[in-house]
Image (tube, rainbow, N blue to C red; front, side, top):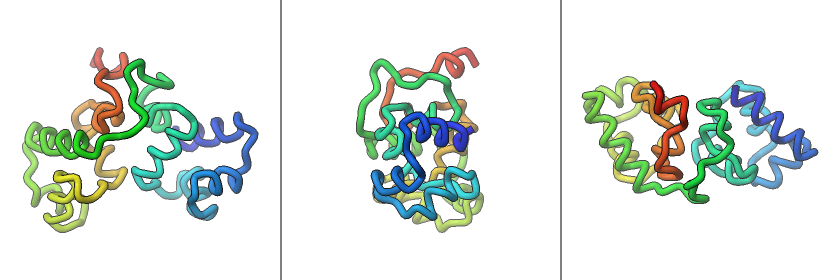
Length: 153
């Protein structure tokens, strides 16, 4: 889904891949891998692209068909994300060690994610979104509302 939305938004603006990669300051080869669905982009790059197009992260990811949230903020709040990661980890009863094994990282990496000392990977955030039926924009502190399709689950 993300590949279709990335391509559609870019083409809708009349941009080439090269144009966009230059505008958001990422290597063209990397952008091509992301748009082709061959690699996941870093979370902070996804946020940058969402800001560039003026759409929600949830929309880009295909989590929601809602382009924006009424209460949406431009910037994501890394402290909101860290707080939500801690809260959700406890809710799903995962330890730091269990998450570290699942994502093949050390326990200290998980702690850095939960203390806002390092941006988590997109896979990490998507795991929580899926496991908890949560909006990524909500986890990022960019909205306080859940998409209608999630609030009905």
